[in-house]
Amino acid sequence: MGNLIWNELSRYIALVASAYAVWASFWGFYFRKFFWDFIGGILRNPGGLQPSPKVSFFITIIVKVPVVQILTMILGFTMIALEYPLPRLRGTALQRSMPLKVVLLFFQAFLAVLFYQVIPHCFDTALSSGDLLFFPSTAHTHKEDGIEFEIRVCPALQKKPTNPAPTVDTGIALANHPSEEVRKLDPFAPPYVPNILLGTLQDENNDADYVVLLNKYSVVPHHFVMVTKEFRAQTSPLMPPDLVQAYLLLLAARKANKRYMAFYNCGKNSGASQPHKHLQFIPVDDGGPPIERLARKAKLEVSGRPFSISSLPYANHVFRFPVPLSDSSPDQLEELIFPPFLSLLDLVISTVRHDPTYPSGTPSYNVILTLEHMHLIPRRLEFHTIPEIGMEVSVNSLGFAGMLLVKGDEELEAVKKEGVSRILKGVGVESVHDLQVTGTSFEVVPQDSEDL
Ligand code: AMP
Image 1 (cartoon, rainbow, N blue to C red):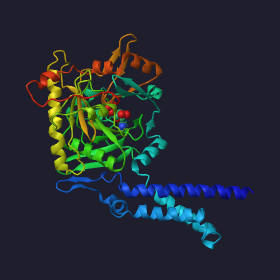
Image 2: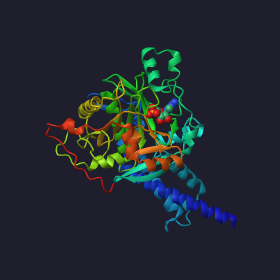
Image 3: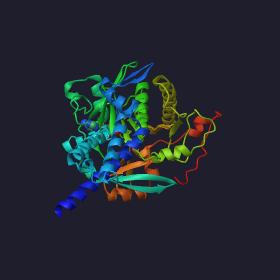
Image 4: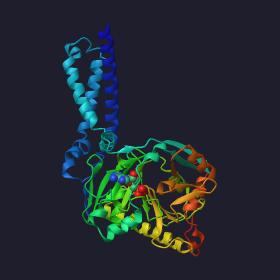
């Protein structure tokens, strides 16, 4: 009796696993992507991304000829036929052969692992090895002025190790005197912990190399950072290869049916904690972050010009990319992304110049990059203080994407009471958009902020 129950149980497990394998292989035909083919690859002009020879075997059997998908589907159907079983197979030696089923299941499991590609795998490995710390959180939706903000409560952050180095001072020290002493304070300098190192990126024409690492202190799973291989200061603006590589990463994720957003906290009041130049990437919902939903609603009179989301109570400069950029070569991507970045940066600088009380030094700003838009938001302060309780809320690019992070329920209530828009306004800069566009004919912005 006991044997019978075990037998039935293992049969059901094999059937469910095989049905999943068939389902996964079906989608694998549509999304033929070896997710990390760009890692270790070289960006070449002309020619585009040349994958590293190390992954060419996987590209052949997953992307060029979907061998893995075909074999998984055949094995899945065979197992279902044997275990269900098909009337013709019932009672045959094949159907009753345990060794055959074990071998087929073994191969099925082996192939199915290939569907489970590097980012989730690396994340789990790094987490279980203790090289990555994950801080669980709960996301709350908070509707304000027609915008659905996300406020994430993460009590475990109270125990997060604090960064020993003050951002800008260390950055300047590293740039001017790259001594061993100072370099030790830089978590993005080699050697890298193998479990969080996803790979490297190389741009042959621009002589720009990057290292891609999982975020060691993750609140959102699969959050990763792209850091310059050589030290560059976080106060420096994004350069063409930075933007092209970031956009290619977003595209690669999209091709693998994942949606990511990139962001860059630039300058001492932007919310950055590390002085070494790094762009960050987090997975987002299909609709994108809240700010993206608002940007998408803006109806532009003239495309190809920066615009501002005027319903937001702070200066923000946005550019909408022409679609689709997915077929563009790296050269074309640079042409399509970098000049708009410079225009937005000009607007950031002109905005802070209009503010006589703006802190001295290089301006701080946040950059949010999605496949559709690029947003630049000038920053005056890193923290907003909620006056009644004297609580400081730190804001970085994610805050301006509409995703705030707080350390407890008390903070959550205080933030809701204060209002997210007010907090963002407090750390942003007053918009002078009307002044900036006076005399130009391209202005925009009738957007509808309802129903976001
Ligand atoms: P920011 O605070 O905006 O400068 O972003 C720096 C990010 O890097 C934060 O999200 C940190 O959690 C993350 N981080 C800090 N140290 C490391 C490290 N050693 N390896 C990977 N990520 C790190």
